[in-house]
Length: 541
Image (cartoon, rainbow, N blue to C red; front, side, top):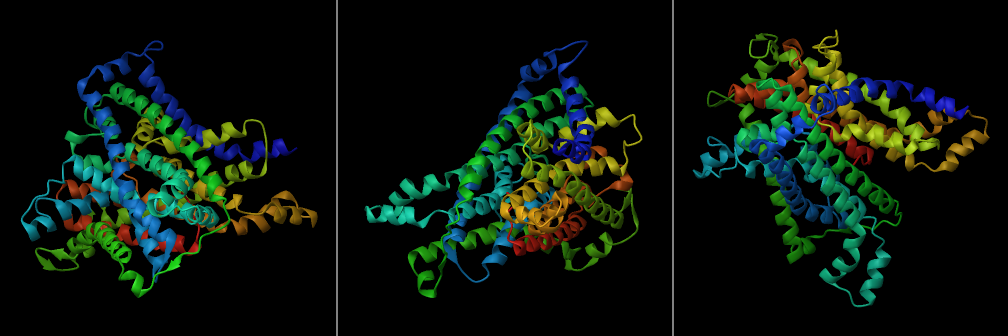
């Protein structure tokens, strides 16, 4: 009876994933590996081409370098947040997390306005740092984008390092770096490795930042697939590149999921270190000065691109003005993308809320089934449900073109929403699953002993306790959906232009003021969401 209930509960999410993820994925594999029978000629053609080989090599190299830079910037912040308490800590954590959900096109805009040849740095110093249209810009933007992952994941585990281990080591004479290397580092290494793998996957699948900041000279696999399909109309080459990307991303995602298991086991540690309250005298010490210097660096690193966007949005024809905001809230038709900017705002918000609803509808039954029931194939279900994390928006868009181009869904808003849901729902799944794991089993058992049915015990007892995780997942799903660019560019009709796509098109037309005003609106939405996340106290990583 329980098995029948499991099958029924998983029917809707399974059908959705099969139709909107696995069938498009199989279509790509078929296009890249089939020509009147199984063949490797398309893959061989791609690998024999020096340009494509260079793109694949650069994609992996920039992901490794971006991950290393992210760790260098993020680990000191993780130490500070784990070991010290200070006024405004929660607000600062929320601000630090904002870059992670910033639309990547907005991050690229901020770097262009800051480091471009007509940017603020050049105007103030007269020096072109050579960051835009270079590999340096890609690494810096990726570090800006992903270092909150390192700060939050590592600090969460660092707080859970049992202080008794360090105290025992200190009684045996361990001090300073020796204590850290011999005791603390092995205990927090699962968080460092898991955050590094997640950062690597995000950088490997990055699209907007390499496209805008790197240009075609520093193209990644994502950009190469996009160019092959949308510019050269070469679906075979695009599909072959997508097959290579899928194979590599699946391998990287498998390593990440294995590292996440070790991280989750260490995170179960219940003995929390009490943060040290920072005093004025401690801030005046050498360690305090280092912390202040790091805080200033991170503050400038994070705030400067955002302030550059804000500054540009408030200027029109060289003077302070709100004209850019008046234009983005205008209902006037814009021939650049075939809709008004107000329509783009309305589309993004509408698509975002529908994506949240569908993401919860798919993630909740899966997370509950994985949490509550043991059944044959449970591990396989976990892998199949998590697999969309290893896919990219460009690959998904290619699959949708192959599968749905002859159906009424093609160029409809529902296909866009389906793509957003596939990209977003794994974050809801992760957040809800983490919250359910924290609930003590005896609470559910007590509800059953009082006569409640299993579904009622879940709705009345477990779901309210997991509500924080559900809210966090919903905010992530909303933020990711309104920030998506790759699939939107490939699948959206002009009247379904979103805010992120409008920013990209404004950038292409060098209309930075309108792009900045829209980006500020996206930034405010993201900040509001993450202030809510910080208030729930939940983690989603």
